[in-house]
Image (cartoon, rainbow, N blue to C red; front, side, top):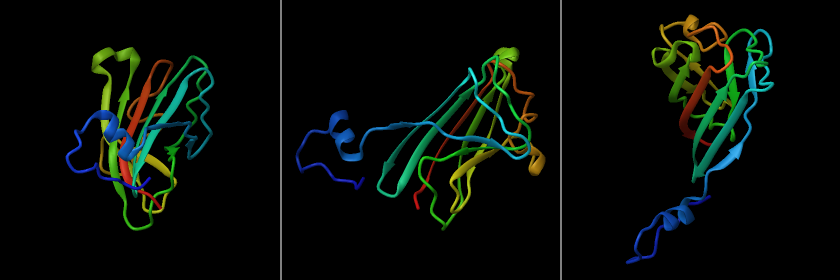
Length: 155
């Protein structure tokens, strides 16, 4: 959706901003792992996004249920719109270990690679072993959560 500036002299309101940029939309991201496929089962996987001109803002949340299969290997999640080929973009990753309470949170970066249709994440170290996976930053279980947010240039 193209940005349309408000008429000169018009009072700005949340409704006016919404009409200028559009509303956030729901989508269901696909969740994959590099070694064996995960499945949400009775957990939840939700995504939301808004595209303002050539920029896509997204938010993904996964909450594991008792039947969630966390698969194995590094995780990636489908984006709502493919990314432009020109540059990588960095967002945020936040994980929660429900068995550890408030002490069980980890943060990292969400990476949208140039030209990619997925987002992956890195938590902890500065090498491949820090990729978000079934074993990093924790062994995921029922009630655990993964949040990914960011913005990137649309293809």
